Structure formats: C-alpha cells, structure tokens
Length: 268
Figure 1 (cartoon, rainbow, N blue to C red):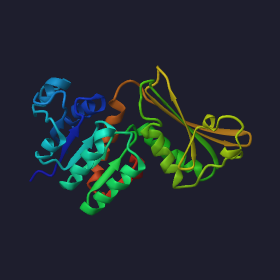
Figure 2 (cartoon, rainbow, N blue to C red; figure 1 turned 60 degrees about the vertical axis):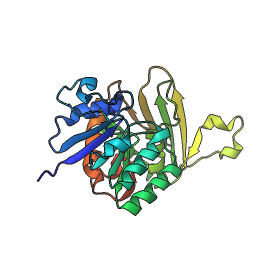
Figure 3 (cartoon, rainbow, N blue to C red; figure 1 turned 90 degrees about the horizontal axis):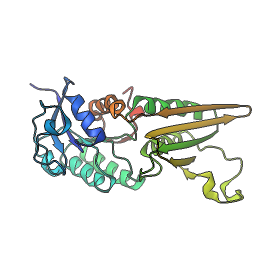
C-alpha cells in the first residue's frame, strides 16, 4: 500500500512552485500528482520546468487538479484567487499549505472556520526559508525579555503587497507575546504619523521597496545602551524555500484548522 503524500502545486511553473516541483522528483515520500498553471495548461510539466521525467499534464484550474486526488494542495498563485483555491480544496477534503502572501486576517478567519468544519489542516507560511523561520523563533524569544522592537521589511520595487507576508507573520507571532513599547505614543508624534510605520499587531512595521532586494527582514530590539538586530536576507534563487515547503507538506496532514508560520510546527 502506497503511504506517500500525494501533492498538487497551484502555480507549478512559477518562481517558487517550479523549484518545489523539480525538488519533489527526488523526495521519496512525496508524490507530485497534479500541477496547475493557466499559462501552460495541457503541456507536460517537465517540458516547462526542465525535468523531463515529470510527464504529468498541467491542469488549467485547481478544480480540475483536485480531481486527481491529492492529499495536500500547495498554493503558490495570487492573493486575488488564493482564498477561493484554499476553500475549494478544504471542502474537497484536502489539506492546504499556503505560500501565497497578501491574504488578510479576515481571509484567514474564514479559512480557519472551514478548515475546522472539515477537520483539515492549513499551514500558512509567509516564508519557507529556514533562515526566516528561525528569525521568527529567535525574535519571539527576544520579545519576552526586551519590550522595545520594530520590524523592517525589504523587497523588490515591484512587490505589490506591503508589508510582505514574512513581516506580517512575524508581527502576528510577536503579538501573541505582547505589544512593543512606544515611549512616544503615535498620537503624540510631531510630523506625519506615517513616518513611524504601520502599527500591526502591536509592532511598528516599515516596508522598503527598492531595486536590488529580493526579500529581507529585520527585527530590531533595543534596550538602554544596547541593541539586538536579527536579519534575514534571501538571494535571487527559490532554492532556500524548498526545504521548508517540503517540511510543511509533511506536517500539514497532522493539523486541524489554521496554523500560521512554519516555526509553529517545526518541532511538532
């Protein structure tokens, strides 16, 4: 009896999805059974992403791909359609790993409700790179001892969502510990309040969008006469995200409801 996890990747020919699809060829316990790409629908996946042994035909829609019987959907498309894909998969009894950023807290509340109803797991990860995951764990440790911190989120100039999913995930994680201390309350700032960033989950978050960045994140903690800076930088390759995505696929089937961040299940 085959006990491997059957995987569908929505966005399988994109930057992150194609790297994951190529990697799954060599992962013994995961089987890629479906792939979605509207642009390349009907083509053999391997011919598009450079792995000829991947002969499965690319589906035009998530609905079509779910007919192929995956256990886990990996969502790597666009925030405008991602929620619909996630809810469709859950209602068909499929667990979901979310790599798409840009979904709101309201979106996630709806997703959690459906996941709980269906008894399925959703693992939403703003960043699958293990360096970013560890930054979140270390930042959570620091926030228990240092009350002052701010988050700086860097990305390429054409990134539409702001802040990034990685920064939002960190802010949400720190919110479970406490709010950061502001010695000057925002309503007492002299000058444009926006210069102090956005207040998200009790953290000040600043987004920088410039050419030359891919994804970088800083969590800066301050105490009198000392400062702790935690920083993650990614390069142009999608390879750093593969190991974390594989871990998420393996873990999501043990979950029920929504879980945010790979760090929340690393030791599960």
